[in-house]
Length: 187
Image (cartoon, rainbow, N blue to C red; front, side, top):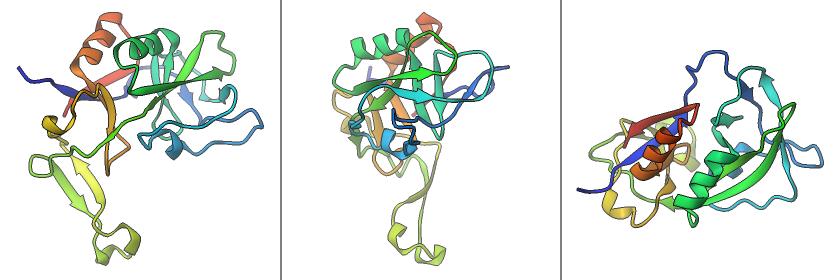
């Protein structure tokens, strides 16, 4: 049986949940969310800070700012154990919460989107953004070519880096753990 993979996302339907803002460095500068989603390690100095936009129940997995994965230390340990070569874990303090949290960075970027099996649309000259022509404008019902994934267990698909993908063993481990805030969709 071939390996299965899943998009891991923030379950925004958890009632009375917190909402986190973008990371802030120790000098008080807001960091670019994109830096944490490129599929490459991130260079930061010191602990980061995550402000709370909307107070509510803490989650084991949530996304700060625009889809920056934030995980409780128990979830971070799971990722470090199952996919040590695929992730970077950056310590982050969440205002008013003593528990340890980390930003999860997928450090692998893999060209694996199966364009025939997915619904993809591309930027065209008619969109008026010349530097994006030929790139994905939308990827719906994403499917990946598993043969291109190799031994990766956590990664971002090249060209559509907004998605975080995990192997089935990580999905199963998160479910066994009862990690709150996770939502999975097979790709």
